[in-house]
Length: 99
Image 1 (cartoon, one colour):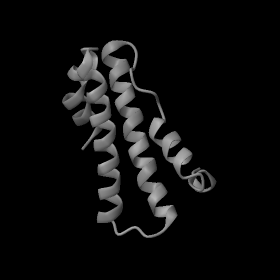
Image 2: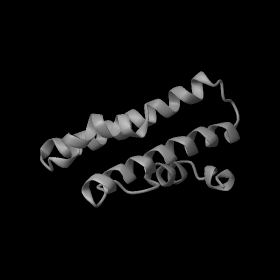
Image 3: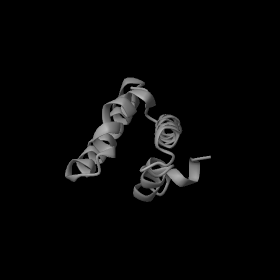
Image 4: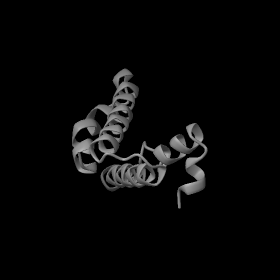
């Protein structure tokens, strides 16, 4: 899915700022991660370098999604590079190869 597709799917729920907003954010992050795993699997990636390439693509898509929120709402409820930072925090060796 493209950043604009995620935006169209989740923007309204996230911006309501009610009990469902947090659930919408959780759902979106989960969907991003599932998509990342599927891309790694579909591309038959076995080495860390290839995995980092996919993760960089997904992080760029996340940042593009942040930009869509800024463009429409003047600010983003999402934090840039949150996927990258989370992955590196959970897999510190990625920080060694992420350029």
